[in-house]
Length: 235
Image (cartoon, rainbow, N blue to C red; front, side, top):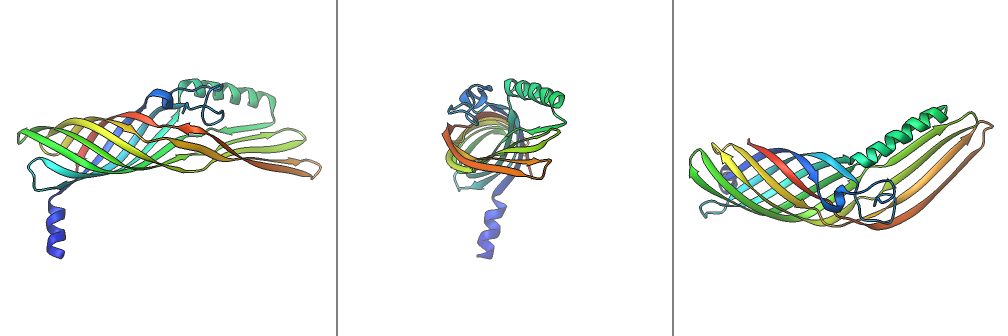
């Protein structure tokens, strides 16, 4: 078993991937009136993001064909419409409250996929590849929190989102240079994730009293889709 494991590892190429993550379709759309994180809509309101991950290409015994496993972490902030809206809201809040702060939600996706990669080498220094994968994605939306303080009250309002798992897939192609560096483009469809969670607030009064409440919510599904412009380095 030790010998077999060593042989398998020797035939496995490991790549570190870094890329931009460009949201597409409904995932990129959204404003303060139509936004799936706060209204019963499907727009994700996602802006340009970043990705870091690993790819394992495992030899199959067929020339050029390898089994593939990928692990990714993908971060997307808000699009320009929502950023502008919340910047205005923060400015207005700072003008009208003694203290004001606001944390906006972000999208974090962690897909793990298995699939195949086929590379055709034109020479020892240059090849082209295509690949496809399928697997689960963990979709996390970070919380939204708003704090206001006046002469009589201190109030914290929070929206917390439940993590969701969906079925994801990827398609990609690119070039390999010197069997060490890859440059490619990938399309990721991370499935449809239900938007669920809890809203809550807590108010403290200067006279010593407190007031609080919470409520669960369930909205439509958001489908994170994006294009990755990737650079990979073989480790």
